[in-house]
Length: 391
Image (cartoon, rainbow, N blue to C red; front, side, top):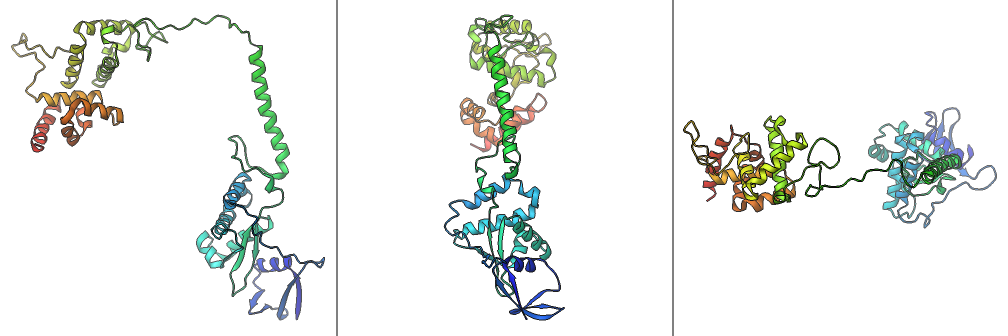
């Protein structure tokens, strides 16, 4: 028995998945009429429907452009992610073969690499892709692998390969005009409205804004108080108005908050902050830096004179010079002043401590920066051991 089928009928017969039609060598077996041969010929118009691979027409990076086109057209929403995955694998296998011709796969290969474990699921995805015009497939029977190549449906090749706009959804050829018109109209309206409104505004605002001026001596880099808005009327004394002094002051302000004395933070009011700067200026620049850093290193609640060795009324020494290695106290002060792991703070620690930075690295700067009056004695003892071991 000889049955003449068109190529399209042949594909549909192969992909139908009907259990009663099975290949047997060079023949097909149909229970209703036994064995018969199939000869694939052209369609009803007498012309052959065979599709040839577009050798030399793909161009460079076709697979990447093909994937972007599926993304733009939201193909996964239309046909499902399994179909898109199958097409991606085929397109990039073509790319690996330099688009020299169709690529071949056994069904088992695609089932394994795509995760479509069941033949029925693979076959359904393959058929969906073919029906939608995204895939060309030629069955190889039992003895040859199938031949595959991706195709672009009519109309989709007109879609630009430019990046998708942030507010643009999937593109469809049949909706391109309306979608483009709507988006263009919206953008044009918005732009025109803004330009029109701006042109209609008076050139002199009413009321006239009061220009913001920075008081002489004030820090232009940041507002120094928390009230009043804008630049506060806080004048930093000229002797202390440099980056290092401002940084040390900020370190003290953070320290006061960390030890639970936020209500004593001079930044709580512009008046209090101005008075604080005036008091610090009386110390002089070098003593200001030394006293603030020493007070932080010793965990004191106020800025004390680290050079004062006079005995207190209780007979105890008021000095900031405890029976602790001064190098340790200096390391603690520097680590508290530059506590972060940024390149800037790390460089500052290295330049300020010199050879002592080796001991700091061994103990970690974070531990020294977080130390307080309760933990400093233990850390000081550890410092002595580590430093002795590194000699």
